[in-house]
Image (cartoon, rainbow, N blue to C red; front, side):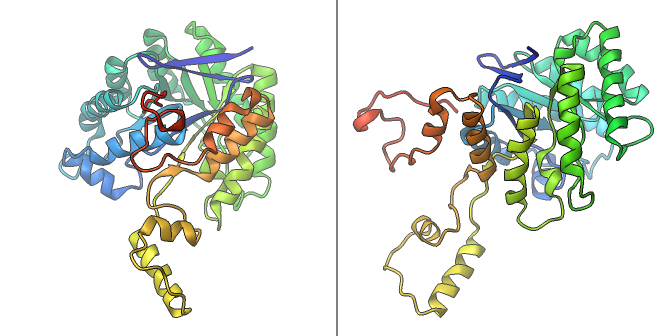
Length: 353
């Protein structure tokens, strides 16, 4: 049975058909996050620190690290990205103990990350483009790491799933020429938005089955791509992920965290409540208020997608006896009781960040 092993200094994550689904946290990525990009250019890593811890607490088993900031002071990523990648990886692996996924389109940044990363990280990524194959596969071989293989090549991204399968097969075969085994290739079959292509879901399910049965490789995807541009994206994602798992997908690059309710949303809801003539108890705190009215939480917590994944793990017997599902659904510890064992006694087992 195919197993892709990813390691930190102290922990191992395994991608496999008979393993729990591997959640690769995507939040440490400045793409589309102007505030984070500005912070990184200014040498401020506070958001990176918060995102690293929050994702692990929400259930991420691997963290994706992307340092793709286009600096205003220097727009050349070949110069700016490698040292930034080193800095972020060193920072993150000092905070959390999960394995990392080094994510960049800049080969120099990938190698910089490989040089400082402890354990056996996942490299993200290689494509079927000839130049990319010649740049990335020697790194994969040199550092003996698994790699994400994205199913596009010099002709671009095809809407034909047979073409995307052929590209994946080409990458697996070229990797073999370098002595890289198929179990170290994690194929991203490229999920299309279902809002733009009605058959996108059916395509990826069929493609994942072929990749598993014919190439024997593990798979991953950018999970939120399926719902791009649609309302209630969480609802679509929550259905897509268990269905993809049922087809054989073994991991996803995704956000495991439900972001906190904003003060603006709280103020708007309070105004609606007041307009309806509802009198709230004096001194009610924001967390009690948002819980009462079903807004979520003022603190980061595991998102609904994580609930769907954990339920699917249980239903496919990748969570024997439902231990993880039960733990996931236990109420959070009361204030001041964190880290205490059964009955509130100190010395209970602590979950490491």
